[in-house]
Length: 554
Image (tube, rainbow, N blue to C red; front, top):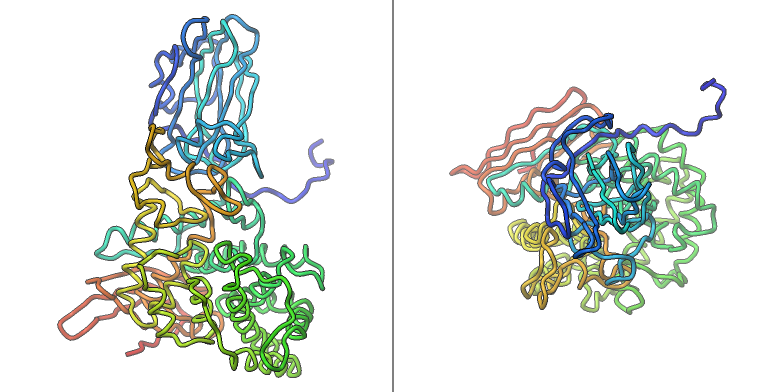
């Protein structure tokens, strides 16, 4: 009986069927391909009347079809086969792609891989069969019939979308449709990354990366609120990293963990969450503090800030600034835990770090973290971050870069956001990428929804860097989603002024916008805000749930 089985943790994600919206191209002998775009019953009948025929008869190229689902999804291909002639089973190649070009690329072509989750495979297809194949992030599916002298009658080549069924509680809209689109795509990018745990990428990097989680946390609290995903991810990171080991073997990621615990508690006000991490957090803050010398230098050997600064001297001051930020968060946590000795130690170490001189050495990620940590002049950091526009920006660090610029000019920050994230939308993005470099679009490129063309750079397959060259590059990465939080915080002006969002301070700044409105989920309910430019300044209206006091900063 079913109740005698020893079940593991239940998978609470939802599974929903979807159909492709466009046939990108067919090869060889393919008939009635438009049938693949028609939603229908996902049950094979003994006799089917509408199907697509793929036929290999030894003449011409093998039958194949490339389908577009219209936007990035996470899930599996759904293949329903009716009849097969010539062979008992049809041998097919099935390839997923986040871009059309990737779907046409087998493993090894322009660094196409099956890393983390298979996306290129051979499948045996019987008649009267219904198969779910794979589980990955994709927008395109390519199917090629490999069996010679074989005809395959295909009823469905759709997909099963797998996701957490969560309401979008946060929202943002304004008179600039491009910014509205950026917010929505940020929210969707993060949502897809909230799978079994909080993954950074749904195709590649299906891991819990703690540093990457901070921008994801910002999006989650801005859009989804207290939905359980953050608590699960923070707990998993702690349980899988016994001290004195550092998370992901990177001291900086353990620094981020302390900041995460602080920031999530300030948002949620969850006392049980705070208490759960007390022994580990106190031990970790002491471990990190022991690495800081009284003159503000440190004995931390491994310093990783982000890929663009990896193994470069510019990373050193960036990581040291992050350490100062984490010591500030740790001191507050120690106070909350009632450990005055640990709080005093962390404040002493933070003061020593802040007394040092910092140099970003031409790296925008380092400058952004220095500004966030308060260890460098904010105007100087903002001026540097505005040099050459969005060149040198990264998706991981975009929130911190925008926040640093906004200290001097929200208008300039919005301009950089439009330039950088708008460029991804311009090349067909429906989710935001693991990384993006403005140099990639300094020349004509093939969009992700276009077929490769001779002599034209493919924005996906011909770019990327470090560990994400070519098609290994993920086009849906949760860490790229935090501009949603930036828009809520800087344009709508939503600032958490007391633990658990008991007090929200509104300090809206429209920049070059005429109006903006939106919602922000709190643990007490959803806060609504509307801001509109008037002859006298900016008029602000809000509707707060019970338990939330709103103050307006002039």
